[in-house]
Image 1 (tube, one colour):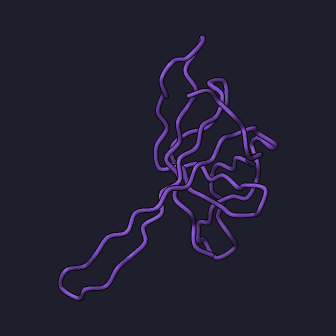
Image 2 (cartoon, rainbow, N blue to C red):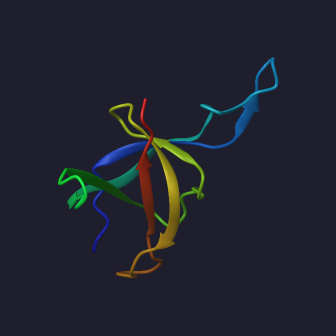
Image 3 (cartoon, rainbow, N blue to C red):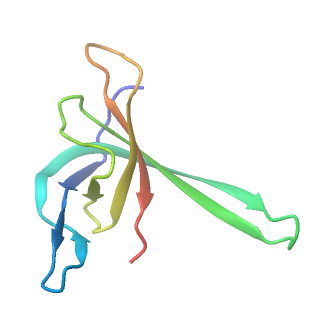
Length: 109
């Protein structure tokens, strides 16, 4: 699949320790305005014990191969939604080096 960017990402990495010794995710960006392609899919699953339906959303992303992004990083899209990067892998090679495929999970506010 050719890389078609539909979003600009801010990539954040690392943690910091506050005055009382608690650690928090850092909001310090390591890269901004990174072109990315984000695709959200959903799947309806049924809990057979209760009969309730749940809509499970999955977000996949693609960035260029030279982008510095690692599992555990956080990314923010242009709408301000923040995702954690659960996995980074290589997508299929179309021309030259393979793009990086990201498995993302929306962080609930």
